[in-house]
Length: 416
Image (cartoon, rainbow, N blue to C red; front, side):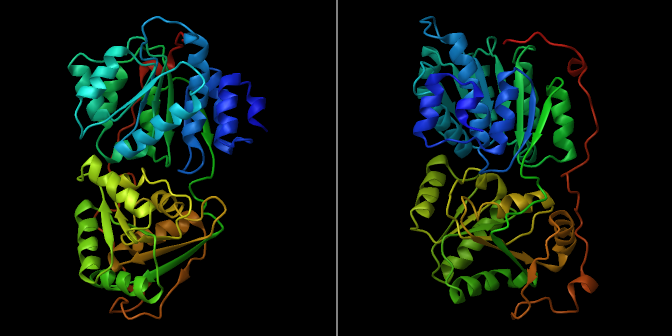
């Protein structure tokens, strides 16, 4: 299929063609017609699959038809909610790119910066608003936002919004929008809690899943080191030095842990930086730019902050801490081996993390190469014989009661 087969406006086709897009990706090919038809949608797709274009392009097409060349005051007709500032910026840039030959305008708002420029733009009027939950609700409480004319609501990276504790904010935001809206729900992983959340907000949705979460890229070489927990930093340094690793993305479970890894590497004269939610927007962007420009060889990130990292040629990913959700492992290593490039994904498995590793193996069904000839292994017995189960191995991150929205059982009058 070609983009020109998707019945998009000539203005959008021109913008897409200039970006070098000829064939839609699988998520785009499946999702765009559904969005154009006005249906609610649940999309499960990993980063790097073209997910943003899958909702941005049809939204622009629909709004361009509605707004046309109207010179009336602009109103917020599309709202995209995403968990991090980096993601919000990326999505806003995508809307600017695809809509450059229309008269649609977009604004990206997030916290950590002055609200005054954002408020000034809102007063002038925008068609598309990309926002993080906190700043969105803050400006709404101050009376600067009117969502009564909203046509479509997009909840992007829903699993991370849940992990970051934004679920109550998301519920508040949904209540501020018209009931006849179209709702699009995107997530890299689909644990039970996310599906239950989708049932509350969507009406008779279509579901699109591409690159199943159990699959890992064939061009990514996977390795695992069974390492004593106290020796992980030494092993990391050993690998970086002996194998000459550079441009390495390291995943840590917590913000505090990420900072500690950076401190340990710097003590050994390894240029490293951390990126996580406690850092200011300017600091995070500075670190990310330095990593992309290869001024910093090692970037240590939490899963949440890493959702805003988009680097085509990333050769190495290291799981310093294993995730307790197997699907997150797939998402992490999917950061390398993109755009046809090869990559290496290395995992450190402590004794307490072995149950996590067993769950990961069950999901991916890949015989990952075990590296045993190193000096930092567990001190006693084999991993299978001595593994201790972590105290908190709840894969979904907590118990969630199933709830269904009465509204989801009712037919809604559509804006299209």
